[in-house]
Length: 308
Image (spheres, rainbow, N blue to C red):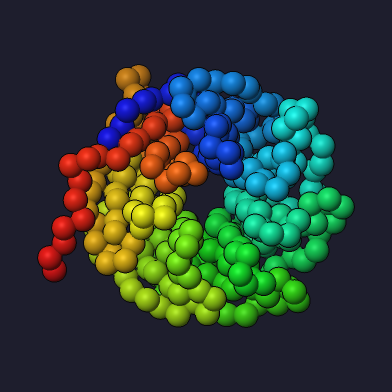
């Protein structure tokens, strides 16, 4: 259930990331700012400026006091959170940068964007280690895991690619989706992940990418964003404001909510662009086209009881 609505951004809210200590989270917006919020109270702590176009991707390091941001201005920035300023920029993307991820155990940053390339950066030297080239359209989701030397990317070309992080070569291409792959979610403890396109949500195993099962998706929306917590509750956010909750193991959709556009917004501005669980997995935060951030907590009445 939605228990808090935060308004401060002046544009669509496009991205979100939580601090590993779970005391704050950051959001990036079409208003070109990054805002840092207190998790407990929802109060604004800080506004960071430096991007010249919308901020589409954010990540907070669990190993250094760094935050990373990327956006439509082709910029990828590393912020020092002790000084609250940009200390490094990573130059190489030829167009807007749509997604960003940190490798969990090595000092490597992954960015993907409209130039159809996922770029691997050495965080400290700012050097581009590899351009992972092979997608035919925008790369809009990416992740890496500590257990495998590989990177997984999802693209508007409808495919998901697996890359060898040691050589920069493509290892496999998954072609089960028929529309743009806009979002992926990797399970925190299991060896699998899910991906979403306009018409389907599919679960694959890791590290090989073998098909596990289709989720029974009737969300009737373009799914822009998804996340799963350790309890196996997956949340998916659609461009029509639909927020659906799924049982990770069975693929059953057990609850549906709706993000309501705030007063003064158009109905078409109810869309959800980004969402994330907090570090405990008990709190969910969604970011929307109505310029707000909504905080959701577990509905005690929701059940997993599923009898096919």
